[in-house]
Amino acid sequence: QVQLAESGGGLVQAGGSLRLSCTASGSILSINVMGWYRQAPGKQRELVATITSGGSTNYADSVKGRFTISRDNAKKTVYLQMSSLKPEDTAVYYCKADVAIDRYSGFRDYWGQGTQVTVSL
Image (cartoon, rainbow, N blue to C red; front, side, top):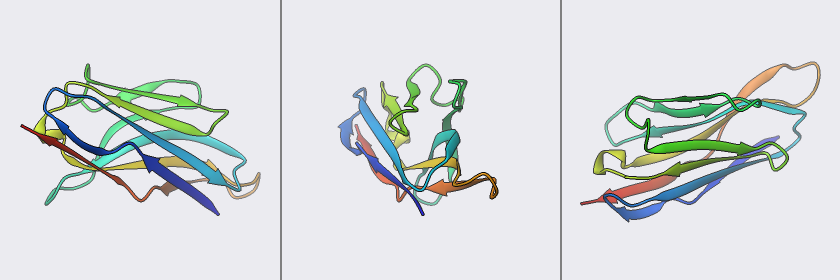
């Protein structure tokens, strides 16, 4: 079984910063892509940023230049540094990891429980 545990969410004023962390644990052979997604009330879940095991990154246009994704492969942890936060960044942020648990099953996606980020004016 694989678990993803997120931390770092909270309430921040517009223009402020937050850093999210997500650590994978359990029976893990390898992790490919890790990423952050978010879901605001009444909206669909959307991609925020992803990072491969080699460090290649991808960002949603709405967060480019403000958010930075990084990872520590040894710690099985992905981070999201969020700066210049806006009220429209308010959402539940979910971590996702593409994980192989053995050599036979292939990779599959696992999700964290989510962490609330609220940006006030």
